[in-house]
Amino acid sequence: AEALVSFSPFPVLVAGPECVAPEKMAQILFPTSLSKESTKTFSALVDWAKSQKAELTLYHLQDPLPPATLNAQVTELWEKQMKHDRDQAKRWQQEAELRGIHCRLQFETQVAEVGERILTAAKVAHADLIVMDHRYESAGPSLFNRQMRMVLAESRCPVLVVKKSRSGKKD
View 1 (cartoon, rainbow, N blue to C red):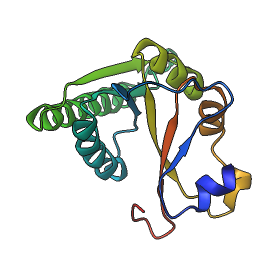
View 2 (view 1 turned 135 degrees about the horizontal axis):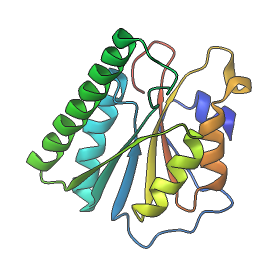
View 3 (view 1 turned 180 degrees about the vertical axis):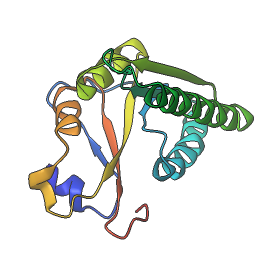
View 4 (view 1 turned 30 degrees about the vertical axis):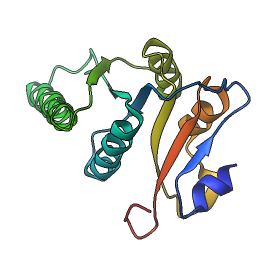
């Protein structure tokens, strides 16, 4: 499955061993780093969600500022990044709402296993589908993202993996 996801020129829908097929794709979870690369995926996802009459949940996990950090400059940079991420998510939410899609924001700030938090977020959102970006690893499937592996193996709903190609363009 890893090679298929890593090298397929198309998005891949994965139904892992824990997957229960939904009757309808009414709730879609989009875990995202809010990167520029994810913008195209989100925009296409909004179009698809509209065609399915589905709702979206944008999920973002931010590492907290380590308690031992006493440096004011580091704290200020971290706070600026947090504000930037929240503002970006709100812009995406507004874009979805303007296009007729209800979009919830779910932010978490904690030290956590990303795969586990995505699975928990899917459960909380009653997700019928998880849509994830996958960045191409030049060394191939041997470096398949450990977090994605966990989500694909343990998700109770299908996972649509949208790959970013070697050239940096969305496939």
